Image (cartoon, rainbow, N blue to C red; front, side, top):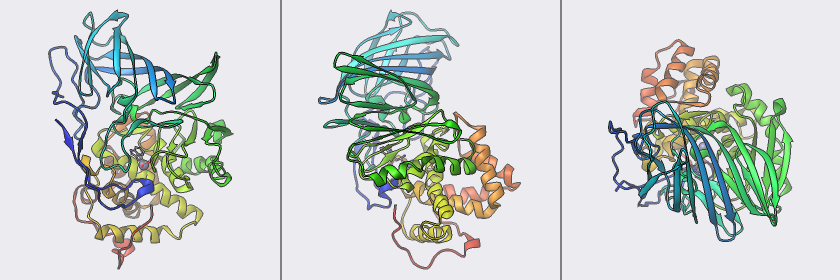
Length: 485
Ligand code: TRP
Ligand code: ZN
């Protein structure tokens, strides 16, 4: 059994909360995750933190997820079509799926045998699949999704979540497998489409573009197409009673926001600043990477937001501008450019958090960025935290990533200057658009743009526990205080 223990967390909305010891397991059985030569696709990608996430032997190109949803009971009837290409001859392969009942699987139209081992759905096609050849798998399934536990997050679990008359889906890092069978790792991104049928008094909000809404009796079927390749943890389907507000962003970018009717006007006003935010962030990071954008205000659920692709979901209380900047920044950092292993999560969170400071620097909303960095640096110098570049699964969403991360980026900016710093950021988002990259790739780009050897700099910030000095700012600051999220 693969056990994880999380001790502390600092999500965007819940920064620097006190440690809450928790202990639970991912529910995964002890399957081998190494690749094999027997025509069996491996059960995982050997991610250092989640070895069973994803599966070897094939690459998914497209998911079509058809769901009939009873919102009151949270029961789903599902039919998933998964188009993939085998990268070796495959006599058997895995998908990731947690809970739910599987009633039938076909591969290339032929009935396949299958069994479950923890989160692994093992599939044996009638005929061996040939290397470099496309194949199609369909999975018929049903049940009530149960959240996947991830201790250390201030929420009961992740994935498809149900709360009375509301369904929201927030899956980072492992939750997507609680509502569809998938290759559950960002190293295998794919396009998605969703066909969701619900009672007509609900509205469905999912990633991508709404292609059609068809009425069938007292139900409606919403068809969303997400044409940008997407990691499974970034897929989202939300069902509730929403007001829908459409806006047009820079370069005619379609923007769609979903608000519960009770949402205050000032919150809606905040979201109407999105075009301005996209314009500003595009100046810092390069062109906005996707076909559309928007957001779902849940008005309930966990007090955290997730950067679900093209459509962040804002749980809990009223989302302010800071968290909107954070989730918008993730579209470049983390979504378009994925971190290649969960150890490299800082490649998403450090930037999303730093962008919040850049925004206040630009708007002058919260004093100078120097004060902000000083405050957080002072806090860090007192607060125990994990390595930014290897926080461990227990502290994945902790201070090392969320607080030391943005401080380190500011240190880098001081070290190499604004031109090299923003040049590096733009090169990063264009070079690795719609793919994945790791810490080494980022360091290489920063070295190239600054014409400097930055090995020591990054070693100190990412992989040493001691907090490096930021000489140019004459830090550390004299006293530590609790920063606000
Ligand atoms: N990535 C989110 C953020 O910082 C935090 C997060 C991780 C989260 N996993 C989650 C939020 C699951 C809600 C649910 O923006
Ligand atoms: Zn984030």
